[in-house]
Image 1 (cartoon, helix red, strand yellow):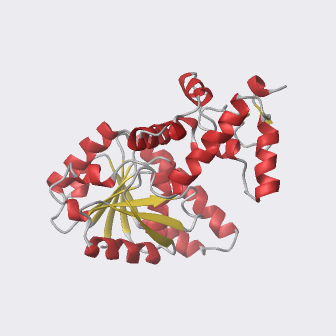
Image 2: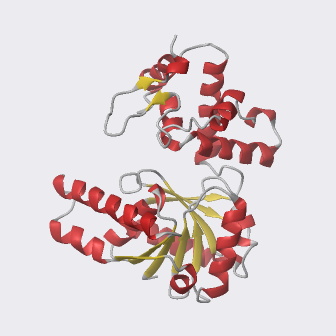
Length: 296
């Protein structure tokens, strides 16, 4: 497993490419447009320079990492030469289905197809291929270069061999892999997202304000970030998509997304990515300012 293709050059995709290249794998980062790839390389370079400034990497290791990454807009040509393909696109089943079918049609017989999905069924994704035993979930955490966990999700047909290979590759990336089974939300988001959704309900019902809710969870429960700030960081659209997966999967009212979350996503208030969610996010500023609509 020397040649890895990462499909999707967004925040998670470029983070995964960064970590794989840093640990000696040859990586091709694929996206639809050159400008997305240029932005990704610029971001990877900036993060590598930060690691050098903190003495985590040497200048030589930074250059070696960048030399291990190439980019392409041709998924078919790239996947045809890959040992492993990691899909890191939006949480949209139709988009993923199309990508998995393309990859499966051209990738070598031995190639493993992994998905960084945070909630979508690995078994369902595997059904789009003729190699369900070689399809697996690799749920990295954001920011990828910093966070140690990889949630390794076995689909119904994922083989022991595939699982063992991915567990070993995860360790080679200096991560801690945790094997879980394929049910809605897996472990991480089945626990995290209902907590975030409940925090939004707590705001929606007027039990507390944005800062009050986050302060209780930070100081009372020792969370490094309050649930509403974390929701902004994840993206409220992503939170809603995951809650919908949980609700559809379990048919249980406790997983119904809060109406406030639905309205905010509809209004385009998505958190950091849109500049406003529960807080106002100004590029380059670390100051937390509660969004005007939530001020008392």
